[in-house]
Image (cartoon, rainbow, N blue to C red; front, top):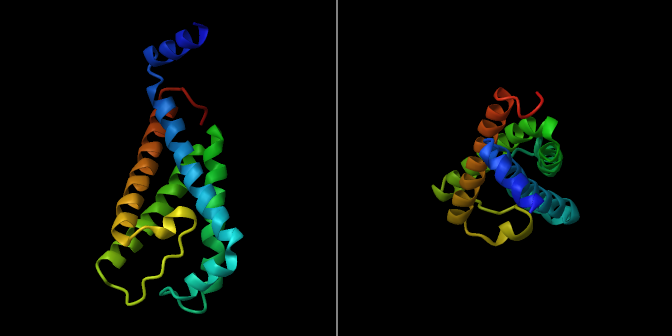
Length: 158
């Protein structure tokens, strides 16, 4: 009964955004930990897929190391309330980039279409990638909006 009261009291006090923010952050942490660690674990395969991308040879090593590092770093930022806003911002940038890339693939802009995604995502078609990425982009943006709202209403330290 004590738990039921505290949950209903939190909802009554307008804490719905806190729950949504936590759920959005959790979903993104799961996504970025799974994909980022998979890229690290299978780094040779990831590097081979990345070498088939449109990137020039000069920036390829940077991009190959940057993507899994950014995903894992973003997950860490999303775990802590004080860094969650930055985590949602980084997540939105990552997902905007991935969504844009998937959109260009769907539009047949690139001749090569390898999928360097990690984990279960690498088995999805590009149309599904586009929808999946757009959904997680929306989750990232909503997380930003809710975090701003929470800070404005004093529910979270800035």
